[in-house]
Image (cartoon, rainbow, N blue to C red; front, top):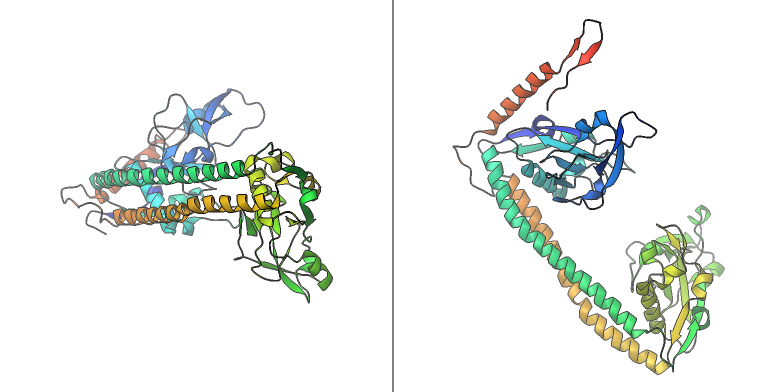
Length: 446
């Protein structure tokens, strides 16, 4: 470590607590306040436009009311994501899916915010996360997080430089996100214009059942996890829009007769049968790779009839996906929807003459190829920006981003002062007994 630095923990330099839980039933003195949850916390900012109201007892308002420069950290979900609370009007509290960190004098809260981002990007935070299914960061683990802390003056110099550089990186990220949005909008526009509704007068308007054969894949069952006829299969996790990911294929026992029924042929169209509503019916074409593969009941297979180009069918289904047509046929919940074979069969299917199908498919492919060439470039830029952010934070917390100043008060002096103040406050807040024998606890002012 550079001179004047010291190793410490969050618990040594800040007061921490979890937020308030939701209270059921009637509570005397209960009233409504705005609450901040993990969904409101983004890296470096807090979104206050959609905060929930919470009914809490009056006696708990002061304990959980947020103050300027409190650091809010996600306990679960995007663990470690954090932002600094600003001086918003009125009493607002935080929920129990957030940690509140209130640093003592001599600790720059912005330094802690960037240090947590460094821990997340470097992977070091993973060492403190507990739980297998429901991962989270406990109060105990949070307070034990170790960090290298420079003198207070140097903390401020580091955060000033970081804010300048990271503001530029954030601006670049925003520009890349907007570019991706424009690509998505342009893709949607091309697809919608290629398959117009209502259809031109010389086109036919049929149903999916008239244009091809729809089948549901084989149901997965534990009895088929092992057997003499193990075959690879595609499932909903493999099928994306106009792309099949074969990096994670699973196998199942398909007896010869069943395999012939569910075996995919080149140019079969696969659609997601069960998905979130916005991805329901997401289609892709099987292009023969890998060979000898089947599909399960999480997918629907469309096999075009004579007079229908498979490429045209894919174009129609992509158009329906972006237009929200499949959502009109969905059944299920708001988080998981299903598109049955019966419902898909009755979906409208615009059908131009075969020669016109070929021309439209070629024209759309040319247009989409042109705009999709930008996507890898944007992805590369985003990866480089992440690496630059990681390197920048690594340099900052190794003491190599700004110069050290021997005139700065060593952080060890600040830490000793914090320990002394904490010891004094603990003595002031110790338990005493009243004359009537009742026990009282005087609040320690942290």
